[in-house]
Amino acid sequence: MSDGPFVRMTTKPLITPMDVPVKANSVFNPGVVEFDGETLLLLRIEVRRGISEIRVARSKNGVDSWRFDDNILLQPDQAEFPYEEWGCEDPRVTQIGPCEWVIAYTAYSRYGPAVALARTRDFITVERLGTVLPPTNKDACLFPEQFGGHWIMLHRPVTGGQEHIWYASSPDDMVYWSQPGVLIPERGGPWWDGLRIGVGAPPIKTDQGWLMIYHGVKEAASHPVYRLGLALLDLQNPRKVLARASDWCFGPEVDYEQYGLVPNVVFTCGALVRDDNVWMYYGAADTVVGLATAKLSTLLDFVWEHDYLHIVGPAKGTVV
Ligand code: BMA
Image 1 (cartoon, helix red, strand yellow):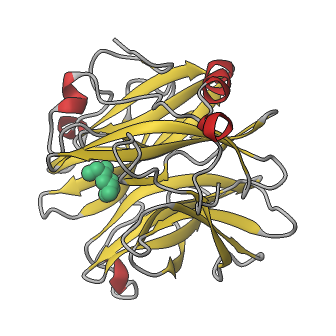
Image 2 (cartoon, protein in one colour):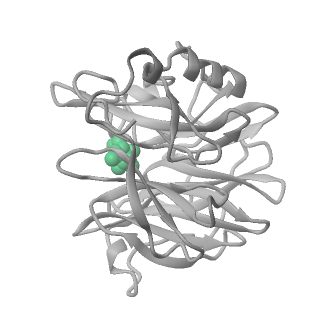
């Protein structure tokens, strides 16, 4: 069942806590990458202490027969990284060179969630760059190329009680980030993305612009619902929004998305393009992993057809 452009690939979750090689409470919000002819999921696994770590699972077809690596890719409780004491969460992977990837993830500690980066060449070991943006901040990812000699990172700080998607840029080192600005604001009021938003999968390059899947939250009677929406960013300058769909493109509709540790959540950290189809891996109800696909052209048509920027223009006082 699906009432949007994305169609679920399977009737059941792709991966559940039963599939994980450790005693897990939940497995969700994976980053994804194609590596060595296989699909790798960087899975957030909440172990029975309540703290999350990141493990890699590999599959030849990206759908089933997942094999888990023995080692933990990113684990908390490292003496040198005290801002990860409460866990490593929600990894988003971007290829930044022929054989190099950067993982943006949430480093969680008693001081709140912060943005951390790590580089890898093999998805077995990582070189941590450390915490690059302080709390309260999360939902970060990089673009896979530089713009005017700078990397651009999207991230989601909490500013004045509001939670918008911001950008920042860095020269080669990816350690120092500056020139911040708001890319897309939470929409406010009763909108599906009114309460808070954050980037989902790292943006996908298309001939029409960078296609960005993002999550938005609406809260009714203290019950938040996490859905996914689309925006299109300028190819040469992704700080510029070309279109933003009014309607969500994917929401919690089936039982494993509506029931779980956190009900009514679909939350993506990674998508791949295969034969002009977007394969979106997502966490469902903060408990299991799902997979939904859509034609890339359908998503581009969707964002233009539902473009709210061009229907009413930006609200006074907002940046887009
Ligand atoms: C967000 C993040 C996600 C989580 C979502 C729904 O703030 O923490 O990891 O999936 O909430 O609970």
